[in-house]
Image 1 (cartoon, protein in one colour):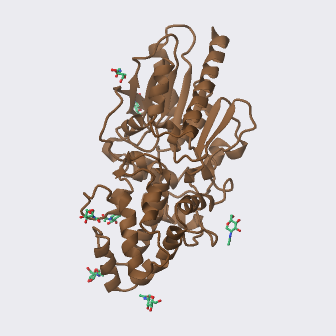
Image 2: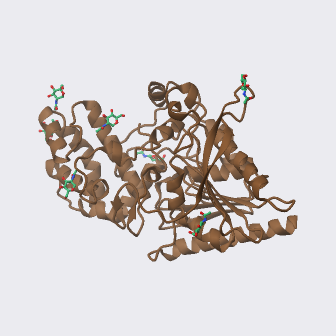
Image 3: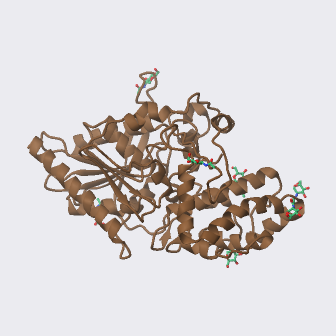
Length: 466
Ligand SMILES: *[C@@H]1O[C@H](CO)[C@@H](O)[C@H](O)[C@H]1NC(C)=O
Ligand SMILES: *[C@@H]1O[C@H](CO)[C@@H](O)[C@H](O)[C@H]1NC(C)=O
Ligand SMILES: *[C@@H]1O[C@H](CO)[C@@H](O)[C@H](O)[C@H]1NC(C)=O
Ligand SMILES: *[C@@H]1O[C@H](CO)[C@@H](O)[C@H](O)[C@H]1NC(C)=O
Ligand SMILES: *[C@@H]1O[C@H](CO)[C@@H](O)[C@H](O)[C@H]1NC(C)=O
Ligand SMILES: *[C@@H]1O[C@H](CO)[C@@H](O)[C@H](O)[C@H]1NC(C)=O
Ligand SMILES: *[C@@H]1O[C@H](CO)[C@@H](O)[C@H](O)[C@H]1NC(C)=O
């Protein structure tokens, strides 16, 4: 079963640098929870205090699984709002990603080094950093109020940081944060059902063709001649040679469909590669025929996926490893093998994928082969953070309903001071992106809501402490 990377899109190099900051490092303990390991490492963070004034807050991005500079460049909303609200803006890098390697080049080499890659250690890094910032900057006896922000896994961390360390963080904005995507909290079919729904809105034919393609791929690649044909037709960098290669290919395709749904924004974006506006529609348009079958179907499908894999036309050969985003992927795989096990499956009702069961035992075995660690229970994140029993306050959860990850998101709230903001036509953490002339009213009003709520929190903070 494939492991879906939450934020693959940040794993790519960003060409244009819009936002400016100072890069700093803080010496941070490798292990916050024992007194038997006194090693430290340099945690990277990006800071801009130029607009911080009048007792303004700290806006603190809880970095997720990738190089933090990419999050800084892709979270324009935080910069725009920060300037309006006189905030100091900080982006903290998640340990084991980017330049924040606890054991340098050895960090990923052995389980004894990689074992400190956990969300609980990362949260402890963030409070450690916030404590340092408070001590360095505050002028008055009271603290500087802190609002945490994060998208996707970073959104989960923002919510958990507020939950676990409420003394250090006064409120949090958790965008597209699937904190319920864990064993027993969300049906394992939910994510893939949303993927199918998103494609179906664009084209019923396309959905039927994709569903048909799984058996066609198996059929055609059943012999050497067919393997050779498809390798040539799709210009694969590494020709298909074994049944494992076919499995890898179909898993990469499944992942790709989900990824395109996540970045299904209504204006062109440029993460891994340039992608047109409404990429799902663009893909579906190329397979929007009812009579496609056999090699014709696979030829058309190759052209369809190229809106994502080769939109510029500059890609010489197709390597699904690189389209998935290479940087940081290993780290997320390890997390998904340990604390962050997210059951995913499809059943017969799914309109786009073949049925495939969730198999915890196989996941554990694969993880052991890959990383040399073996977990014994599938609910460690629930144990750590409480799942649906968790109590929150001063939290904003935002979700786009066209985002597959909304499957595990918090879509309603009965608690005062916990808000669930829905963007019906939004993809993955659309609200955190910078404003765009193409923005629809749904995301514009979501951002206004967020601003109003944060202003209320800050006002209450002032009333309490001044
Ligand atoms: C903060 O951002 C502003 C606007 O881009 C820029 O002018 C300023 O130099 C930045 N400050 C720091 C400390 O990088
Ligand atoms: C870290 O622990 C080792 C072994 O216990 C000790 O020799 C060393 O002085 C300690 N280093 C620091 C910076 O405390
Ligand atoms: C593919 O399907 C066709 C028609 O259904 C069948 O004749 C052929 O044997 C199949 N090929 C393989 C390799 O399974
Ligand atoms: C697969 O690899 C083997 C060994 O290198 C080779 O003999 C065979 O022709 C290859 N098959 C295909 C379909 O490329
Ligand atoms: C993709 O990565 C896998 C695992 O690291 C590797 O076995 C495979 O050869 C890679 N494929 C290509 C085309 O580089
Ligand atoms: C990418 O597109 C260009 C231009 O259409 C084409 O020449 C090239 O073969 C394509 N690459 C792949 C891997 O399909
Ligand atoms: C598929 O799973 C959903 C959600 O659990 C369930 O409602 C539906 O009945 C299942 N369909 C089949 C054919 O198993």
